[in-house]
Image (cartoon, rainbow, N blue to C red; front, side, top):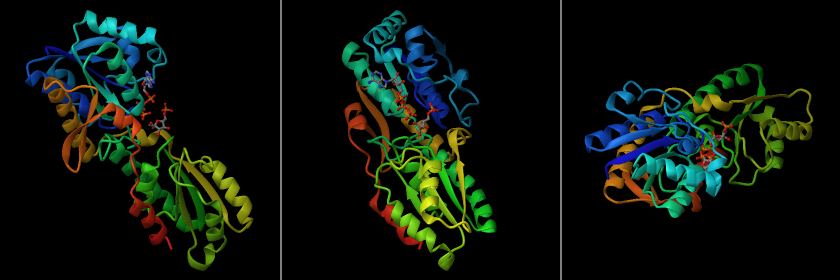
Length: 324
Ligand SMILES: Nc1ncnc2c1ncn2[C@@H]1O[C@H](COP(=O)(O)OP(=O)(O)OP(=O)(O)O)[C@@H](O)[C@H]1O
Ligand SMILES: O=P(O)(O)OC[C@H]1O[C@](O)(CO)[C@@H](O)[C@@H]1O
């Protein structure tokens, strides 16, 4: 293999740059040419591709976002779009691809590999941590710490004014961020898409609030089946029906996707990026390089996408027991 390409796709995540850097520098170390595709699959279709050198990735390890930009591409979902992407890669003589992104990115990569056969390895770049085959995804640790910092600050006001705060964190289909910062932020309740939300229990607890505590922090993953934080707050407020109790909502939003990656994310990104290039050179394909129990592991895309990543039962129990 003499030429490979790397791109980032789906939602950006802190650590993607560290991963790009690892892919570029490992390739150069191994004596192969490396190309960067900008704007994910759209860039692959439109020919947004350029050769990268070691200096192309200087001074980026500490930066959030992605120097290769990211996009969600509708055209790549069509066979015609993917054919255009294949023709473009052929034109440049690309023999292997590193795809940095989430489960959608890997779904696209799997379809593309099955149709056109260009060897592809993924790196798990998403804040959601919802990918099977890696204990953590690149960006998750940073996102959780950002959310946690915000929750700590909100807690000051909650405590000072005896308020009930519903804090919405990201996670369209996944409760990992909510659960982790709910534990770390000492939340009374965490509402996530993976488990049934029992609003009656929340209402009962808030009705009795003054007997035990004076304020409350409730973390809501945006994809909870009962709705977002605003909708859930309205439902709960109506049932609690107590004008003495003050309800507030804060939506953290994209603040969670930005910022300098933590040490954990930089190291994970560097390991996955290097492993992706090494995997391609060893003949691996149609799989993701992740880290499980401290070791690099290659997991077929099929499993990364198809197998659910189980939330830890003891994490759910922690919230219930420690918030009494
Ligand atoms: N079934 C599919 N066929 C072809 N391409 C797909 C398919 N599913 C997803 N893709 C491509 O992958 C891109 C990225 O997917 P998506 O928008 O779901 O983000 P993601 O990789 O899951 O990242 P995040 O977890 O941050 O949202 C899509 O915009 C689309 O171009
Ligand atoms: O920035 P966008 O395209 O609105 O995407 C937001 C989504 O991206 C994620 O951050 C990562 O998949 C989700 O948690 C969130 O719902």
